[in-house]
Length: 163
Image: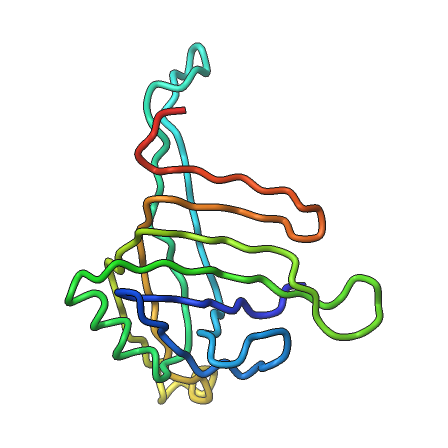
């Protein structure tokens, strides 16, 4: 089971601080991410199974609670600011010693925020009435790096290069 994800983000060279509820392991003032989707695919010939084009990256989509980063994310979108950042995944320490372990990182550079959506759960629905206002953010990037921290395994891809 994963813990939350801590996002460290810069927009136009300035740090965008969030209101993370977790302060251990350098997570204070980060943007606390509740869910994240990152997708890459490639076109291929179904007969030969060979690639027929470049990799296709969908924007990274993440959900977070509304906080002090919310207006700054919209500023980055409306001013087309360059964003770069690091999503750090945490999980309960598998050694069973308590605490959390930083086990995965997704870094991106030279990106842009492409979409921001505010979401207020239906406050009249008892099942949703206690949920906090959230937002969904989408961003693109030029370079992406995935790192499995305990295994020291890493891969970097540049979006505009062929395989």
